[in-house]
Image 1 (cartoon, rainbow, N blue to C red):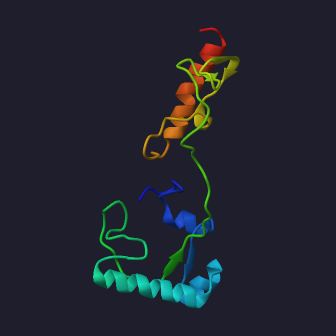
Image 2 (image 1 turned 120 degrees about the horizontal axis):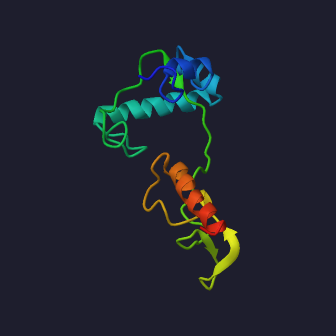
Image 3 (image 1 turned 135 degrees about the vertical axis):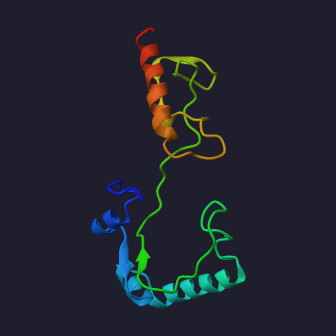
Length: 151
């Protein structure tokens, strides 16, 4: 555990309200705004899957990335993580040349137009690695700026 680092500090997340804690599944359902019976059935189905050695609903046999054994959810306290879907990276985008000049549909540079970061496609391959978009923006932003300045 890394204390004080928000993504690793469980107590910090609880204090900030990013994680919800409850003493029962019913209370957790109320706290996160989902129907009680739906959450109870979801937890029961998951626990039955653990008994079989596989969470069929999510297709998992491990906690994450084939690591860690599935464990039943049965002892308080129970925790919830309110979240929503979002898009944080793209896998396609504007085509650029080695100098980061934007290319048109005829693969010609558009004079004075440069791009870098997530708006540029073709970088991630099959999967996004956390933080790679920051490095992509930093490095290729520098290339784009140097090219725009004639260097």
